[in-house]
Image 1 (cartoon, one colour):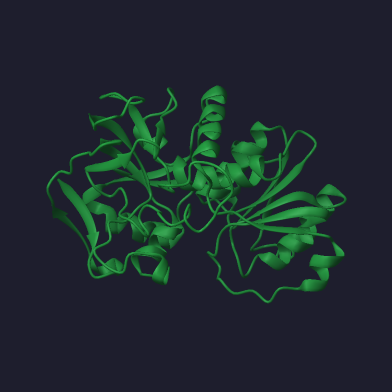
Image 2 (image 1 turned 30 degrees about the vertical axis):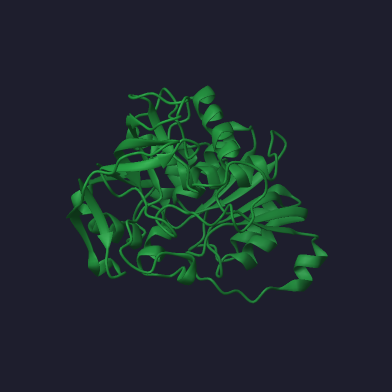
Length: 335
């Protein structure tokens, strides 16, 4: 089978090689992967940016993949050959709050990912694909979609009377717009170009802010709502948090998700205290949360936004494209 491998680590060393097809053991299934999607964290992992928390070489990258079961191991009762499935980002986090053990096995990080034609999964590490989605669409869901779902729905129970601020047009931001709109909330979306802002309007955003034209976009968002937004889905990191604090209402929440603009921020503790802000990180989510999200996606027939699809042989080019930031939505791989 064809497998993408970074050995040694580094995007320049990413190659496609041939390896034997694996076989499932007891409690496992073999999935013929049909599609994968890219996340910013894949770039970090391929470069070894997660340090001791990831494989230090011979890494099969990518966390998000979908396909069909082609073989079922002994003692597996819930799955059959031919079932269409999507993998869980965390291979061992079924339910409950995070702990060290549950977060230890991350696809494309601490364990090999899905940039391959066949992969063995534990029977609890996969879920059924919503009926209205194809493999490429389903492959966008394990990381970006679930992260947005946990931030908007699981942690903050956003509903019709709420307001949500999103940042940019990456996968998490677009899913956050879709989930908040699905829940009836008002969305304020920021981005850097008129074209991207129009795409956000098409997904349901009520107010649009060009953050290049308006460097004080946090105050603008605060003014638009009159008292600040209920939730900021912060995907920027170091260079966006200060404005996120300005945008949020007293007693509101800032979900910290990304580090696209940097990982280190001089935290302004007085504004955090004065506005009684709940600052909460989101690390994707567990299997139960993933299952709840998939049910909601199927019920509302939500469709992910896909920017471009590359073949597995062009994975390196796809990652370079993701790194450029030109995309609107998910960058995907057809396997």
